Amino acid sequence: MACAHQAVIGLLHRTERYHRNREGGTATRVAVPALAVVVRMPGRNVMCRAVKRGAERPAKKQIAGTGNYAAGKAHQIPTLNEVALMLLFRDQNRKMIRGRFEEMSSSSASVAGQPVPTRLVQLVAGIICMVMIANLQYGWTLFVLPIDNKFHWGRPSIQVAFSIFVLCETWLVPVEGWLVDRFGPRIVVLVGGILVAIAWALNSVAATLTMLYVAAAIGGVGAGAVYGTCIGNALKWFPDHRGLAAGLTAAGFGAGSALTIIPIQGMIQSHGYEPTFLWFGLGQGIVVVLLSLLLRAPLAGEAPASTRVRQSVRDSTPIQMLGSPIFWVMYVMFILVGAGGLMATAQLAPIANDFQIAKIPVSLLGLTLPALTFALSIDRVLNGLTRPFFGWVSDHIGRENTMFIAFGLEAVGIWALGAFGHDPVHFVILSGIVFFAWGEIYSLFPSTCTDVYGIKYATTNAGLLYTAKGTASLLVPLANVLASASGGWHSVFIVAALMNAVAAIMALAVLKPLRSVRDRTVDKIQPARLQHP
Image (cartoon, rainbow, N blue to C red; front, side, top):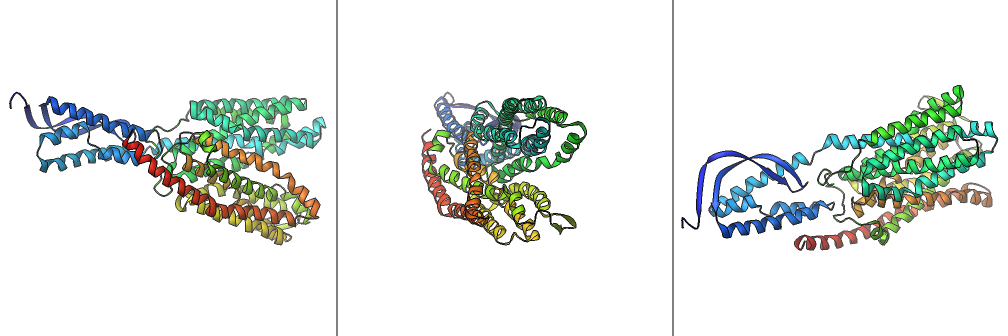
């Protein structure tokens, strides 16, 4: 017996050893109260090593995905330390020993699972980057008239540059997203910031339409790189508040230009549009470049999973996503809501003029402004607020339920605007409702896409879905055709309202059942993979 099993048991003391946190896969240094044990058991040592190897593989399998099913399983598998002590002591002490190790495991996991400062830094940096690129889209209108006054190219020709910008900013996001998922967010945003600065610097010296169009294309690529990366990074860092984080980030782009409109207008009037393009372009680009140095993707276990919203435990590649019916259902819904909202919102000024209320003063909230000016001011603010608001709602009641509420409200608002918008007060209030119920598509759809298809390719997948915005914008000119053919805006409002109503019904009648089927399928596949790594 002495030759087979030689053990020396010392007094209780504290030994420091590395205990691996199975949820995050990070090594955490903890103090473990244990018995000093030296055991010579050749046969049992072999078994312990086998158990340890078996315990590591499921945990590593989980780190590559988004769910916490494997992490829970990993906590149930004995480690080398546990097995060695349980083999040594009697049955009545085994539960006590294992309980102590589980307590230490959960304690270190809780420490590693709460990187609050890091997550907030990533979110704030992304929002500021979005604010810095907002002027490329929303501030452009301030430069059109000064450019036309200098070169007399005509507004339609100048606005072609804006169309080029939107197409490059929208349709290249999947490519930029692929680069983010492959190389990380830092380098992509850094390059995007450089391109943003170059674009407006070129605008400041553009003496031909060709140079103006080239600058617009460069600006579109840079803005798309920043936009897609910051949205994707927010989706990855905040699975527990994915809708809110995506909404706050998108709000930086939607409402960010409100901070700089007055300074830009003032500088154009005092110094001309050329220095304004140059200095604002350089300033915005430099800020983006500096903030890009802070950005990084989360490590495994740094982003806690949601406990309220169903999220995939399997990552789908872009090719797999394109072969999924859920993606195309969301794509159609995005187009319906995007085009329906744009038909009403993009034509707000012509509608107000045709209703003959654009210049009628309206007094609300202690302010008195012309109806159209009042509506545009309120709409910009509400279009920014709706993105984090409905994103936050979706984090609590589910994506599809929130879509049904928001898209249904949009349908009612558009119909009411057409029916009662001839009154200037009603026009201001109802246009605000329309904008408030429309902007949430930029937080709900990216969040839903990542919930369904996982975080590994989240930026690329969300970028592919984002191209629906470009597709929807191609349908907007049909509103003018329809208004001319029908002799008024009534038919436009009816069509736009119906498009939103169809999308609202699809959220509950089509999208939600398809997601339930997919979730059940994944639940059957994932345990089998964990048991047979």
